[in-house]
Length: 74
Image (cartoon, rainbow, N blue to C red; front, side):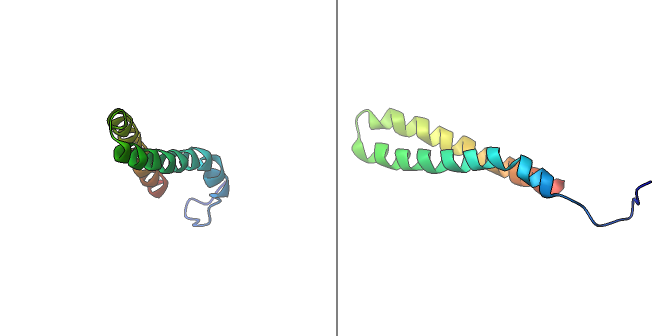
């Protein structure tokens, strides 16, 4: 029987499992933010690309905030 009052936990396996999606979100955030900056300085077709990459950046930020909240609740 396990001790319900024990404070020792093994969370290394939890953090190793979910680090790949977080790394993908950070990578997409950096790439899309850079593409957004470049697209918005070019003009013309860059407006459409800038809007799309900006939306992707916002989605990545939302995903990272949700991941952060889920990690601190667990």
